[in-house]
Image (cartoon, rainbow, N blue to C red; front, side, top):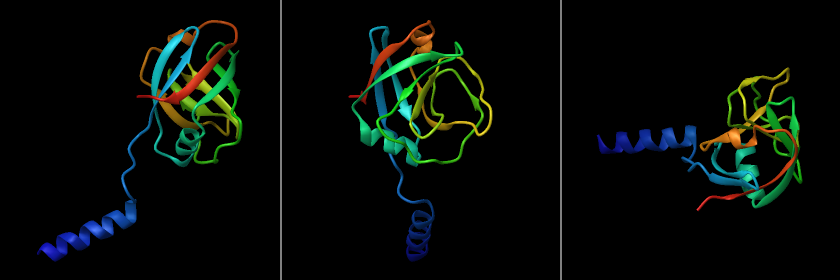
Length: 136
């Protein structure tokens, strides 16, 4: 019996891979600070490896702040719907913080994470510089 349990554990781990701890980040600006949890996917892990980052974000369509990352992130499955607080990737380098919920046209966005704080600090016109860093 113990060998069967061990064999099942080995097979399960081999099929799913090791469990990754989700990375928490801090996004700070002159408008305030929020925390976010990065998605457990290759794009989220690639973003975590870039930190710390400073990005100039511009307002787009009064629903999001968007800016360029220093290099492209991996392309993975995209989705069209997003909620307030979604961190996304529109194109290879186009980082987005959504401060309202909505839907984007095809091909959609890569989900990078979700803000756990009050994302409404970004719900104002104009550009803002943000710093992304690993949260303590």
